[in-house]
Image 1 (cartoon, helix red, strand yellow):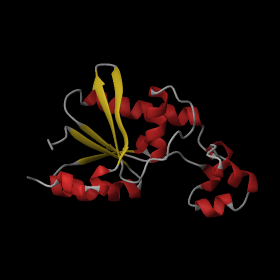
Image 2 (tube, helix red, strand yellow; image 1 turned 45 degrees about the vertical axis):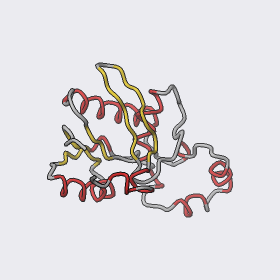
Image 3 (tube, one colour; image 1 turned 45 degrees about the horizontal axis):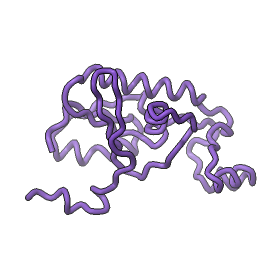
Length: 164
């Protein structure tokens, strides 16, 4: 793999801990961006899914039927504001690095917020990315094309990435 032109990461601890081993081994500096943080879910922050879903049978029903629940969180960040924040952050990164690969380490909501509109999908979350999944985008000028979503081959079959 060629060295990336840049590596950006959400400033949240779980993303920083994810990127740290890669950055150390590759000898790459990581730039942390607050605008790559996951959406703020208001009063649901720092609560487990079990705790949140256990408080409201309707929420549990929605979750079981793959319906969005984020909009029900008291004091949650507005979905359109979240999408605008994420879109602005990623587009600014791409503008700063028009050549080479750029790695962005972020969260499932961030991935959905950026990729969903590219695909014409308005759902809050249209898929649940696996932890450490790779999601690839090809950029040519102002054109954006999705290459892969939720690729976990590096986890399920790591031998494919061993040096020859």
